[in-house]
Length: 185
Image (cartoon, rainbow, N blue to C red; front, side, top):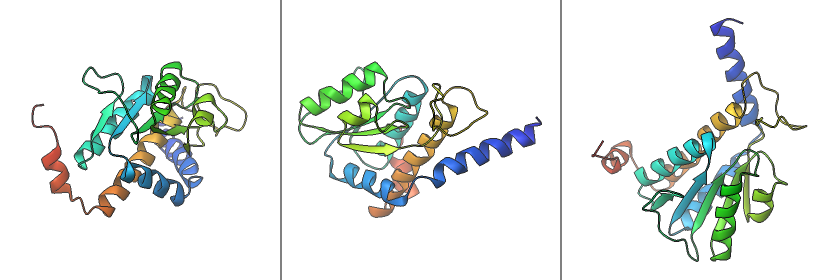
């Protein structure tokens, strides 16, 4: 396979997954974020990197957001929202974080490929990303990519689209987001 054909295959795989996600799903996610006083984001491994990127962008949009596990992350409380990212929906630390938030009166938005997973069934809301994971379960999208690459790529794009919707709703310009960007790096 040539480099060009690899690009074409990956582009096709991502487009196929994104075509399965309806705009109402992204609008619902944006509604949840709009109503949460504080947003916590969790994930492990590569899912965690996608989650961190999402939390960062939320801060750029003027939201109060934290990544679970950072040393300066406060306790969650009633009304808070956890966006929990796990392709399999079984990652122990992410499922534990979701339970803690729920028990504390907060809500959980699970971002996963597995709507019947422990993470999704314990969450009040699910953003279903119909992509492949490392488990290659029956019904997952076909992919030439290793492990959960397709899930990670699609999750990043979907969460960025949720951020675009929030920016649109609140008229956050690129310049305003830039001003909220870290100036200590």
